[in-house]
Each structure stands twice: as C-alpha cells, then as structure tokens.
Image 1 (cartoon, rainbow, N blue to C red):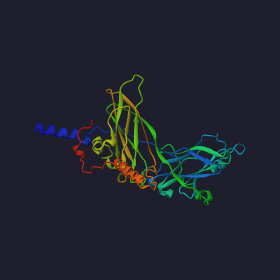
Image 2: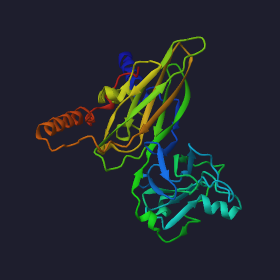
Image 3: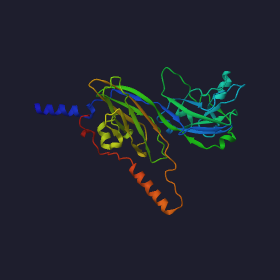
Image 4: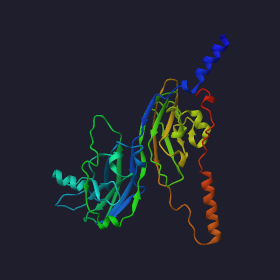
Length: 358
C-alpha cells in the first residue's frame, strides 16, 4: 500500500502539469522598419506596408509612424529650408482613406509638421483591410533625403485612451504619385526585452510576429544576452522556442522543444544564447521563448532578448541562361532549401512521457 502511494505521488510530481511553471510572462513589443537605409528625391513619394495578419495578434494595439533624416536637419517652417517629410497613414494602398497625416495635424493645431504622426488604435473590425500603409513624400528643400522610417506598435493600456484610427479618417481622391508607386514591405522587429530571473527559474516571452502565407516557411534568429556582472559571477541562460502548435495549456515545455530538434533550443547556459528555428506555414502564429536562468544558487540573472523577422531574399535563385552554371545554382538552391527545412512536429509525442524538467 505504501509503495502504491509513493508511486502515485512520484507520478504527480514528475507530471508536466505539476512541473515548475514559468514565473514571468511578458509580450514583446513590435516595431516595423524597412530592411535598408532609405533615399528619397525631392518631391518623390514612397509607400510601405506593415503586415498585420488580419489583426489576429495586434488587434487593439496603438500605432505611431515616425521618421528621422540623416543628411539634413528637419525644417518644416513656412520660412526656412523646407527640409521635411510628409507622412500619411492609410488602410489601403490607394490612400483614398487617410487615417493620419502629419501635415494636416500640424495645420489644424497651428504648428509646423513634426517627424511623426499622432498615435491611433488599430481595430480589425473597423479598419477594413489586413495591413497598415504608410506614404512618405519629400519636400523640395534638398535634392535627396536620407531617412529612416519606423512604425511603433504598443499594447493597449488602461491609463491611455488612444482613439480608433478610423474615427477621424478622411476620404480623398487617389493621387497620380500614389498610383505609380511600388510598395515595400516593412520588416518586423521585436523591441529588446530585458528581464531578470532567479537562477533555476524560467520566464516565457510571447513574440507576436505576423507570418504571412506568402511563404512556405520563415527563419528566425532569437538571441538572449547576459551582461557581464561587476564581480564577474558566472551565469547565463538556456532558451527554448515553441510555436503556438507546440504549446500545452499555455506553457512551452522544454521536453517538447528538445524533441523537436536542436535548432529550436540552445541549452548551453552561455552569456550569449541563440536559437535559429525555421517555422513551417502550418505553424504560423505567435512564437514563445522560454528562458531558463542559470547561475549560482539563488543568484539573479539579468538578460535581454532580441529578434527580428526579416523579409526573405527575393534573389536566392538567379538563372543566367548558361545550362551548366544554372544547374549548379539550382542544385545549390535545392540543397539549401532542404537543409533549412523545419524539423517536423511530432504530434504523437506524449507530454505524459516527459521527465522532470531540468
């Protein structure tokens, strides 16, 4: 009888349902930015798209479009050098619905245009499309402007009331400049998140990237950095990545990750830690990074998580018309595609078979 009771208690303790759960849960903030530095000629218009995946991940978040100029100081005064950029935000590529406009906002408030729009809330029920579009038009003060663009996204907060972007949207006619523009897709950047855990504890961090169905798979690099302490105490982290499909009752279990393959985890315990998974289309959705703090008993371990979802290269396979060279290019491309193919998810893997988490 005592042996039976002991066996039952042991089973409960080793069960994943009773395994030590993460003590810290956070969601990383997302920004959108181009994949390269930008140049724009005076009077020219450029259009960008921020993918939202139908608002499934960032619904009710607030957004703000911002720019900076590198080769000229911002000067949007009526009397001056006229070095500034006109920023417009819309829910579609035709820009017939203007959600935010830094020039119009300045005119109504009686000040000069600023290098940012006012924030707005994205509501998938009212927005009318899957994406956010940004249009940049250069002034005529300088032949060429070198600039950067950022679309900042923030989770909703109870202490902030940011209006729905469509509440004050204005309908306008499409311009010829807009019709002639190509559209660049912005990359998604997770704002570096710094957290602290006691050695032996874990934290789970959600990254709400929008993986578009345009691609069969997407690759990520997630890096976790531990700063060198003043007293040079040893310490680092182990990290494990779960797709939404791999989660069990809202938890990313290490046994599931290690069963998936080495690209989904880094258990080195080093101060620089990286996982480089490839996510298949069937598992597109938010991803979760489980971080295990490792150091002296009861020491605090501080770390910073960084990652971005880069746009896939459009020129990986180049054909020259020369059969021998093209054959080599095709074989190299197929070899690379096969090697980067994500490890399959083992749906038969039973969570009950997991041993006590390390």
